[in-house]
Image (cartoon, rainbow, N blue to C red; front, side):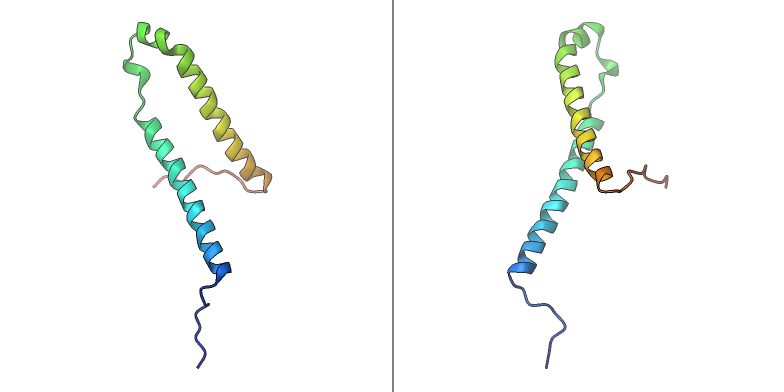
Length: 87
């Protein structure tokens, strides 16, 4: 009797690893979003903002560059980045 399941061979193992890597990548992006949710400079006084402005600016530029890199890679494949629909 022949089973309908695909035997677990090297190919399916590689596919599972790639799938796990993709899921972990999405989880890291979501973690980055959660981390950004926790940042609120509205309560910083002007002195604190001035003291950290250079580092904050460099960090924001680095975040922007990485978001742009990921989005551009998606768009380069012909996919559209769409805002999530409101619930």
